[in-house]
Length: 250
Image: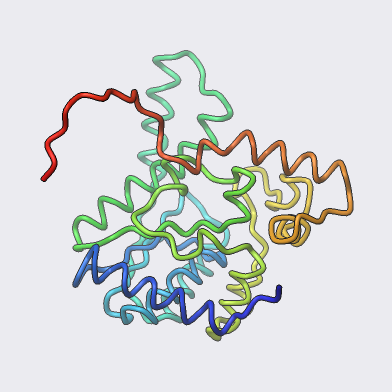
C-alpha cells in the first residue's frame, strides 16, 4: 500500500488541532528543536494546526553543539518563538553527584541523562508558557527502542509516533521544508556515529519491514525482532499492581 502523503499530512494536522481543542484549548505547543527531521516536522505540523504564534521551540544544547545553527535556522524558518537553554551545568551537576555517591557512572546513565534533563527542562518551559509538550518520536525509532524512556520518549502528544522515518520525511517535503532539515543525517551526538551506524541497518530497511514484514537479510530481521521485543516496555505505561478494591465512579 502506497503512502498518501497529502491525506496523511491533512489528517495529522487535523488530529493535532483536535487534540488541543480537547486537551489544551488556547495552549501552546512546546517542542524541543534539535535541527533534525522529527522535531522540525513536528513543529511544522503544529504551526499548520495552531498557527505560528502558538508554537514554541526550545533549543537545548549540552555544552557545544556542532549543529546548533541548524536548530536556530529551523525556528527562524518556521517563524516561531524560541528559547535556548544550555543543559550542561545541570548535566555536570547530576553526573558529578551520581559519580560521588555511587562511585562511577555507567554508560547507560551517561547516555540517557541528557535527554531526561532536556525533557525536564521542556516541561519547565512549558509550564511557564501555558504549554503542552510534543513527543517528536517516530515509529521506526520507537520500534527498535531508539529512544530514552522519560526522556525523548515522553511528552503530552505525539503527531509522528505512528509514522516511519520515510513517511515523516515525505510529510516534511510536502510541507515545503528545506532539504537541510528533512534530510539531515541523524547523529547520536555522543560518539559521532549516525543512528544507522549504531543500529547496524538502514531506516529504509527497517521501514519496509515494519510496513510489509519483508526483509531480505535474515540476520537483520532477527536483530530488528530482538530489539523490538526487548524494548516493548518503553511503549507502554508501567505496570501496576491490579488491586480490585472499590473505586468511586464520578
